[in-house]
Length: 133
Image (tube, rainbow, N blue to C red; front, side, top):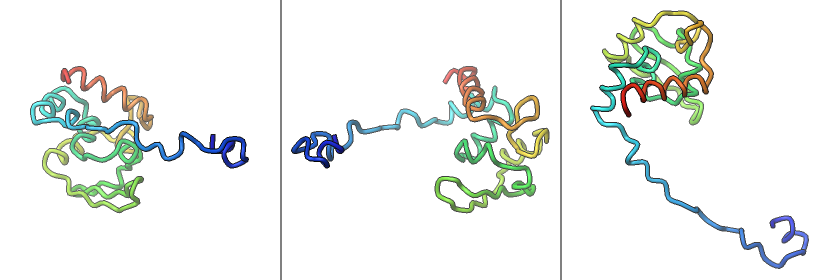
């Protein structure tokens, strides 16, 4: 339609400035303490790490062990480009210290290879299913 309008084939583009088709409301996606506790009971250390940090999946999948110094995690967020220094609170520190270092990256699959985004999403979904979320 834009091409046709630009070349004089049509007088106006009915799709121009259409605006949003829907309004997203994600209030029902926010987990409460019960859901978090249920996932923590059944999840692997890697899923717990993702839950405790609250960082985006892509940032976590690239997070090397060198980013953790025993008390803080240091990373650059891919979306904003901001550098983050996150204190490793007690629950997160326990998970990190307990996680086996099978790879240069913190999140590695059972074969010691970096997790793919699809593999991580599948594991996350399975953890949610086990927790009945």
